Length: 182
Length: 378
Image (tube, rainbow over all chains, first blue to last red; front, side, top):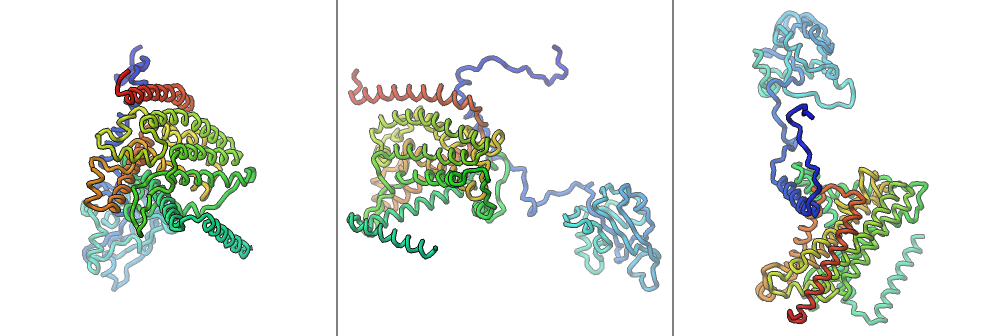
């Protein structure tokens, strides 16, 4: 019969020789193999203490960006919500009052900005849609929660720390992914 | 009620003390043996506890994993956590079981497992408080027969427990355990007869001394009885219900085998008994074939001169434990290498291979021993 692939192997169906029937040589062979595994490198890492680096294209939790003076970039244009295939993003716009120039970069800003992390599929289309470089996906993922409402992230959860007031926290939250877009 | 119990216990203690007085038994001897018993029981419990930890660690190492490492440094507190968990679990006694036997089963398994340690010579004499204290609870002249008797009683724990569970899977496991142990006791005994011919004694202490005192490189019985050792080892695996002969549990066919219906500490007792059995079996194999507490390539007389008899006895105990740990490792190593036998294969191996081999070994040994006694003349 013609083999479908070249991977087919014929099985040796000859009766076992006395040595093979004695079974012990095979056992010793098997035991040397398992013993050898004791000295192999273990692929497991001690997870909570040690983490593996994410790939550079990893898309994790969203971050609402600020500019270098600490003002929010988002203008609540709604393009991210439109782009979102999972309809996870909702927002409410508001107008900037005089005296709030140090808080928001442009005249309009998002008074409410919510992402439902249970709906989000982390596709990164919001990041691509954003004309103001205000949202991008970071290198962390959403921690577990006991309740659904814990997965609806509001502005306090999403906003990046102020680069002027907390430069270290800002740099940590910014990670490596944002630079690519700048 | 408690008052009455208390009085009863007091009366019992009085009774025993009077017996001891009447028989004029050396009270120091009683205390000495009691302390030794407590030490042996405690250490076999601790060894069994850490054997469970070792089992998991060895399994992990053989499979490129890490094993338990969360509880304490290197996961060393893991057995404590497991034991505590078993104690706090809900105890379920099935309605349709026969309750007395259901409780008796694990007790018996544990009891027989602990009893075997009595005849193992753990070391030479130590000299304390102006007394020579033998590191063996009972040096009875039929030591190895005692071990045999008690070990084969161990199957009653499994049988009674499995029958009392009133569950077909349990019963199946119990039946398998019973027939397996009966089948493998025969080649075990036959292999042992050959060894007894060589050493000429049934006492474990004498047998170990025989190996310690000899200065040849082949002093250990394993060099005189390699085939006997192999058969004995295989039978020990079967007697301990360990893979590849763990048909009594066979979790993928029989759910849990004989302990399907057990929960809480009663299950813990069964599992614990298995590890104690492993420990004692390792000790027996060591004493019979690997020189017991003998330190290889070391002359004991010289050693005793340089470090003192007490320290030497301690080193002997350490050596025995090192050998036991090796055999425990072997148990685990085999478990994580070889798959389980099918039931008919198990029976074939026992009756058609091991018994003829053991008989052959016995005949050849007998002939050689006779020739040796006759100074190699026919």
